[in-house]
Image (cartoon, rainbow, N blue to C red; front, side):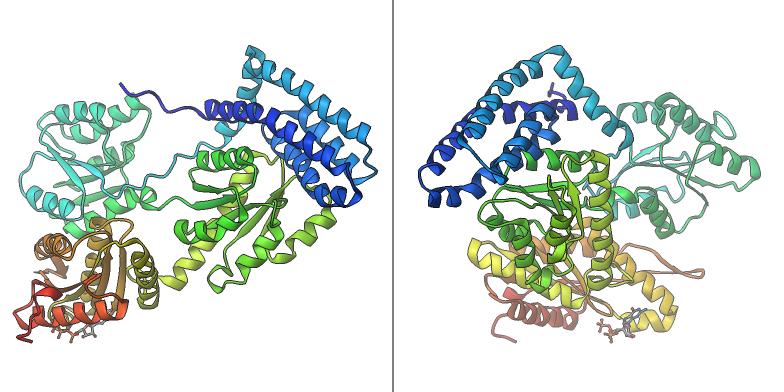
Length: 559
Ligand SMILES: Nc1nc2c(ncn2[C@@H]2O[C@H](COP(=O)(O)OP(=O)(O)OP(=O)(O)O)[C@@H](O)[C@H]2O)c(=O)[nH]1
């Protein structure tokens, strides 16, 4: 059996332990620095900022981790350094700090210390019950329906959009299955041989038993008041009467399970103090965000390129480069102009805070920051950026990347691919006879086809793949770390599934197909050459009769 994941309390205590364990050697180094700074006035001037930074960060991290007495001593030492430092003062502080450290080590391991730490984190756990967001796109759907009509069609559509589906024909088996493995959503019939509202009653009992309402949609042959009332009482999020249009049901399943499809907000934490960085990252992760830590400002730009954060949390006092300087460097790069930056520091002087914010940062949080304050300040700003970014980079109808963003992202990926020797494939996808779809069934029906194809690509491809709407009914996908042949097989399975999706325009049912051309890296070393090859392959696919996938490598000299 696997071990349970450590709780926030355990993780905080590990951080505190690590901090305490590393402190003696850091204090010894500081004592040495102090000795050295005493040799000449030049040395004193040279080493003063480093000594100052040490006490400053000891104050901030000490407070954040709950070592109040340590933080107080560090504060006094910092103050003494800035006013009129004398050897006796600093020696006293260092020896007191060492002594204090011994007490803290014992205290931390005592029962009382453990309880105190627990009490410190409890309020955060209670006030921020945020579930970490799941990245998985596939949903487990339970379909409980004893009437055979439409069931196969619905299962096909759900699976086509990447969901795992289990079908039950009686409420008892369904009941036990939920207790064994909880689904992400349920599609439930109302009437069963056991009773007129046996389906919804089963849901109500399960909700009572588990204390967690199941996201559910009713699918029923009946539309009477009692059936509907029983669905409302079972907390169902939707009610469909048969025959249902599969795509409408898919949309309802999407809405019901939507929040988890969002990628967690990403925060880059830049702090030269590993424990401080780890502590703030821990709080943000408890708040459902994903974090990456950097302990040297010089590594920040690289990390930003790889991690693509929604926000930067930056310590103000760091060696080599201050938070202020780092923010200016970042702001000088056009792609990061709008990236929110939050400073985190134990600086309480408001004049200094205002001056630090001159580099165009969003906010200044003072250490020790309340966990709720940190999480909400970060979330608010990161979400705002996500929204703005999405308006600028995404196509409003499908939510896919627009043309220019797709090209930009592919360019970036290829630039990296040249360094890493990786392989990628580009698929150009075009809906067949789309003009005819519009002309026959109307523009709205055409839009429905575009949205459905976009959805299919989003749910079936990996999160890391780049999916863009290039133009009207044309899509471009960059499938990462995959050979052209494997990409062709994968896209071909999407093509087969898409061809079986039923669209509706009024009472008319129709189906659509698409054609695909595939180019690949490194055979085509640039975005433009890959796009051109994929385009030529697409042209061939159309020419050969449509509804097929053609690889650029198949285009031999007979062109
Ligand atoms: N409904 C809808 N139609 C669009 C949209 N964007 C472009 N179109 C239409 O898509 C159609 C594209 O048609 P063509 O590129 O000529 O494709 P086709 O000749 O019908 O089909 P193929 O030869 O198989 O590519 C045009 O009629 C456009 O008006 C959109 O957002 N919604």
